[in-house]
Image 1: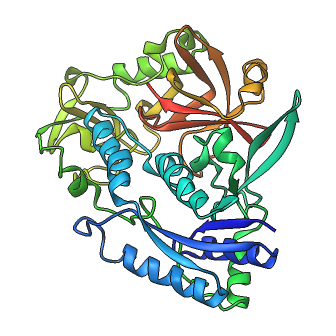
Image 2: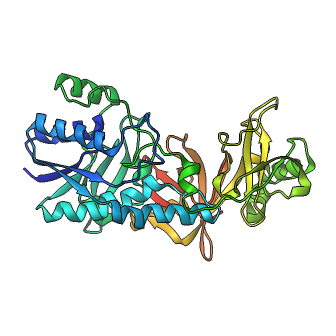
Image 3: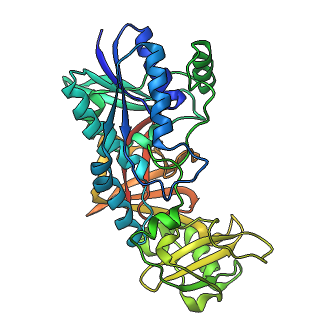
Length: 396
């Protein structure tokens, strides 16, 4: 029997994680993280932290386990919110949920759990951990959850071996339907609660209003790029050509104001990201408009009609050494030599095959088939036979 602290978010997944551990005979403590104080930019129809903490407390009482609320709002602002502002200001698209797991749940939260005498920290992620021995040393593999429709291993792609050694994912072997069924059977207060959307332990925020807290409105032009333009055709030719993979400047669409026509104005290029559809507020077009490129320095955004606009596609991406992370360094050469590496740079994105090449100052990740909406600042996660082996921030 182990002493385990469960990060209870007030949702059904973490509730069932606590239940499963209790049924296994462990000494379980429920701990809720309060990470956010400002409700001014949180959508009204999303559960604020007060409601979530109440639900977590009700579940803990029902299970008969100790429960505490841990205020981490100050460190969350420093490590996550300030990071978000900085990244958006540079024209990059951050993923705060991945940072929350690395910097909060399995760092500060883990430290607090260890102070309570915990042997492990558990969360309600749909992911799995496996212990293996390599050259006499124990290593921990981070594996996809058994429910591939709910797999959340991507959000854990920045964890290191020390963090994984203390991590448990009790529902990683379960299907979502089984989690709901067990919650209902046990009459948990969260059994029918809908899954949360938005930032980790915050909720769904109004992103433009959120960013305007520190990033000032800066009007600029919206340039529409015709899918039949010479600039797009040249780009697509480069992407489809395997020779183009040798030249990083040809991987992504990059346009200039002279390549299209100004059709509107925007409030700041750093509010937008490649592949974005919502927030443009521009109508009257045969097909919806999508962001195909942003230029923060010139404060321009470029749009194209249709979700399959050729300007959305890229041939590869680059991760700088400083932002590259090997979950198990012992598999590095195996990954570089493999033809079976798969990747994703968005949650629930279908895995795609790619090749990983070491360069002088980082890693070139070349797609077997062109991929849409690659944005600097996002995290790329690489999988080998269902295990996350590498992750990193996309430089370009």
